[in-house]
Length: 370
Image (cartoon, rainbow, N blue to C red; front, side):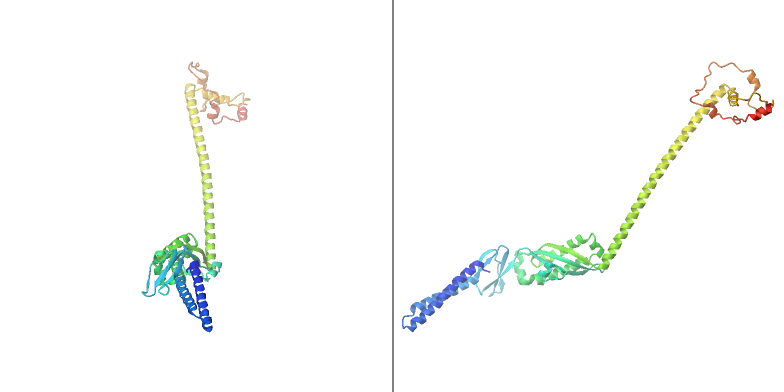
């Protein structure tokens, strides 16, 4: 504990004891030669006293490093005095006992089959059961340090056994408790981080009660049973297939909607075209009606224009309700000065006024005429 200073003082104490032995030797030699032995006695007494004093001092000097703290126990009173922080301190040997604690960050790993676990002699992962009864194995590392304000409590409760007697069993128990609140599938998926945070918080609270400061808790890996992994993989595959089927169905729906929209637009176009054609025909018929009203003979004229060119004679019964009115033909009125014929390019009268019998097979007419 005293480091270099204790070693140096111990070396001086050794020299003092050598002086003591030298004085004893002088006393023996002087006595055998019947010479005075006073000088030898003085030398041996001084050497012995100096050696004992230096030895006591060397045992009472403690050097506390920057990452250490010393707990001092008063043997007579049975109490713990104020801890000694970094620096050189002197205690009274026998009456006071000092124990050095490391206050730097410490690591404790509980794992299975890992090199660091073997080094820590803890080749054991934490086996726990989930809320749905699945067994999982966790590799966990905790990073912690000693709270300098509570180091006396640690010494009183655990002494230097706190790593094996408190840290290890406490972390294992709290990890098991945290795992039991989750289903295995949730831990396998998105709840792993949440599990780690819950476990870390519970360990931090428990450590603080015993004078330890938790810096970090790391769940380094979680191992599931092979059967569970196969079930999860099968479920994930099924979900992926369902997702693909949903995507394909949505694609087909969109494509069908596009085709339907195209057909609707096409039908709308056809309907609009039909409406336009009907409107044009209605306008044409209105114009024809106006022209016929102005010139009733126009109907007979159009009929004659549609007769075959090789007709020379046609016999028509006088009492036939035919289109010709010979009286009106013979007594044609004079042309009206305000009459205006329709534009031939805009309306084809023959197409819009297709009279029945206009395409006559006039061979019959010729035969009847003959």
